[in-house]
Image (tube, rainbow, N blue to C red; front, side, top):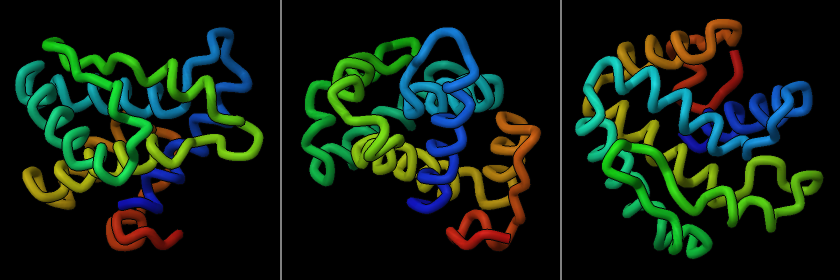
Length: 140
């Protein structure tokens, strides 16, 4: 999951160079997951999963200590942390990778691998996600 999260964040970091507003890659990945999953499990369902993922990520990434998940599932405080990261040296940020990997891991546990990959394909239609290789962190 960590490798998959890193790939998504690196992809969004590259995509962010072409877009007008420069949101953090983690925030863009998170928002795409929120939109895609929110349609499936609703706002409350996503908020609960995101809160759990953040709770699990905080001990591994203390930089996330000020980050919160709002009642609508949006994430607060992440942008301030990631603006302090040198995007040239670490485009995704280790805390972002840990958070997104945790969220993907919970999705895989609760929804299963096939449905998780389907949601990823929906959020990133141009990306290739091989069912066996992408989820396990190996490139196809």
